[in-house]
Image 1 (cartoon, rainbow, N blue to C red):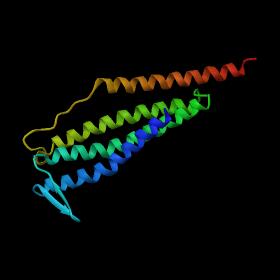
Image 2 (image 1 turned 30 degrees about the horizontal axis):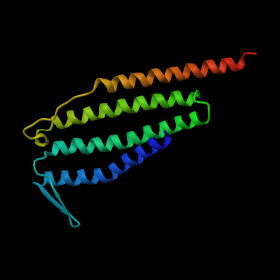
Image 3 (image 1 turned 180 degrees about the vertical axis):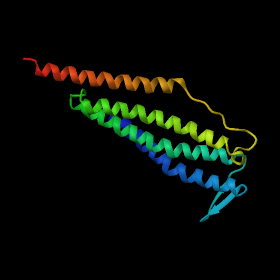
Length: 164
């Protein structure tokens, strides 16, 4: 499982390293009338509004570090599991951090769409759609519940160790 988390982390990192400059160039091309050329690289942005590119770029800037942070937290949780002691106080904190990170990423995504929506010059004819997924918020709630389960499990285990 740790290998899968590590692979996912590297794939998302690579997507950021490639995607952020590509979307940045596309945004520059879109703002300059459709084409831009930098150091022999030509960017075409036909049929894409600047707002769509801003949303995509902001999404990558938020999602890539967020997913990498989540993967690092998961790797630490998996490490305690492989050591045979997953009920440590740090894992409860890690689960809470993951929940907060997911919620923050979604709120920043919504805020970006709203910000672009208020700039008519970026939107074009078709305004961006604002949406969210209920399963995402249920997952955040589940992470906070699991965090409390880990805290209570740690407390009960510590109490048991004190019992003679």
